[in-house]
Image (tube, rainbow, N blue to C red; front, side, top):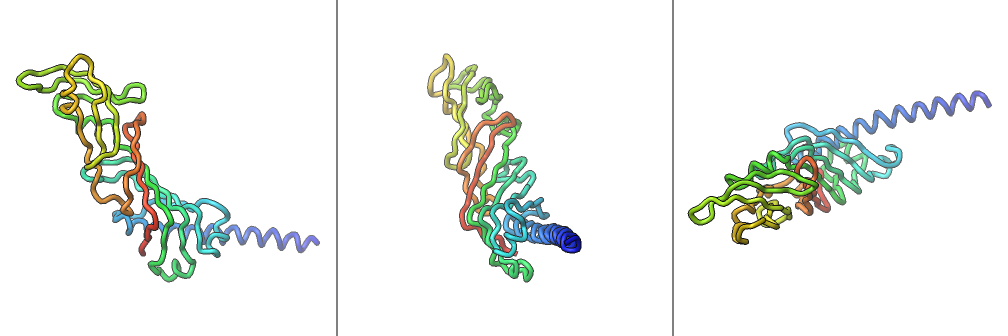
Length: 221
């Protein structure tokens, strides 16, 4: 009985070591594939989530693979803290070991932040954008006809043609036509990693958080 117990302990320890070695190898391979798919200069940090790795490896199906892309430039706009997750990744172990290209993710989501400084940088000349109570506020002076007019406006953000639209929602004490002079676009609309499409934008303390998604994404070798 004692020998059996010792054997089981050794076996469990060995499996744990094999699990860690194997997961490190697959994470490295997936990191290289993600780097190639997203056209990155170097592989990102990758972690495989979910039930024990060996169970997923044997089945060739991974529930969730998380990755950190750092800061990316999208359409000339720096997007910071870009993190993503690939769900329902189909990656037969034989394909990974032989570096075959038939690796796919059922869905990929990416989140990143456009800093407050960048939001302000794209604002019209003479307008300063700041955050207040979870909202964006615009203040400054704009040219209206032949005179400069002082403005203080509440702003809202939405996805639109050409990128993120920052729109004057309410301007105190001035004509409504001034809204067009204060509103502007942040052009986050170039080719995004994995061909994801922007699906949401919201105000956060650090600036604007972007969410993008794509389905049936190939992770080429």
